[in-house]
Amino acid sequence: MEIVGYFFAIIIGLVMGLIGGGGSILSVPVFVYLFKIDATTATAFSLFVVGVTSSVGSIDFMKRKIVDYRVSLLFGLPSVLGILFSRRVVLPHLPHFIINRWGIELTKDMFILLLFAVLMLISSIKMIKKSDRERIKKSEKPNYTLLISQGILVGIVTGFVGAGGGFLIVPALVMLLGISMKEAVATSLFIISFNSLIGFASSLDKIVVDWPFLLIFTSISVVGILVGVQFAKKIESRKLKPLFGWIVLILGLWIVINEIILKGT
Image (cartoon, rainbow, N blue to C red; front, top):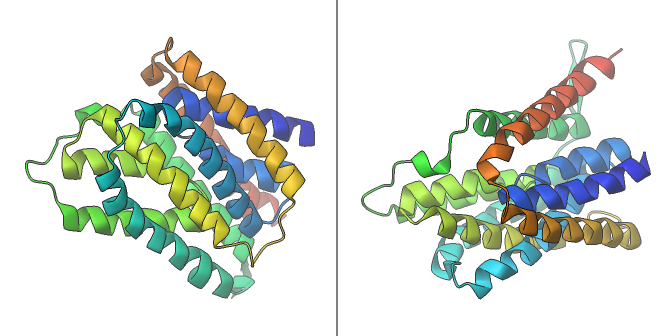
C-alpha cells in the first residue's frame, strides 16, 4: 500500500501542474488510508506537501511577473488568520468524540474526514459541470471587504481539512476584483504556497513529524508538478478537469461510505 501511496505522490504533483490545483485534495485520503496516519496529522502533512509543491509551481508565474502581490496580501493575510484559527484554536480543542449518544459514534478523525469528503464532492461537481472560471461575471467595482472575509473563510477551511482551496480562491479573485484568469491562477498558487506552509508550521508542536517520509513524499510530488507543468503547455486543462472531477467524486463518496457505513459494521 505504501508503494501505491508514493505513486499517488506523483499523481498529486501532476494534477497540480496540469490544472493549476486540485491535486492537494488527494493528499489527505492518501495519508489516512494508504499510510495509516491519523486525520489531524494527515491534514498537517497535506499542508506541507501543498505548500512546497505550490511554491515550486508558482516560480514560473513569478518569473513572468503575473502574480499580483498586493492582492496576495489582501487575500492571503486574512486567510493565514483563518488557518491559525483552525489549527491553533479549533482542532486542538475538538473532543475525541464529537457525538457519542443515541447509538451514534462520531469521532474527531471521522468528523475531519467527512468534512473533507464534503469539500471533495463540492470541488468535483464544479469540475464535472465545467463551470469554467472564465464564465464568472466580473464585478464592476472591487469589493475589498468581501475579499478579506473570503480570505478568512478559505483559511479556516484550508486549516481544517489541509487542502489548498484553489477552487475557492480563483473564483473569488475573478469575481471580486475582476482580474484576468491567468493572473488569478498565478496569484492563487502563490497564496496557497505561503498560507499552507504557515498552517503546517503552526501545527508542529501538536504533531509528530516523520521528516524522512514527508520529505521523500513531497520531493516526489515536486517532480510530478514539474512534469505536469510541461505537459500543461501541450494539453488543454479544461479537457482534463471533468475526468479528474469524476475521480474526486468517487473518492469523496468512498470516504463517506467508509466512515459512516463500513466502519460501523
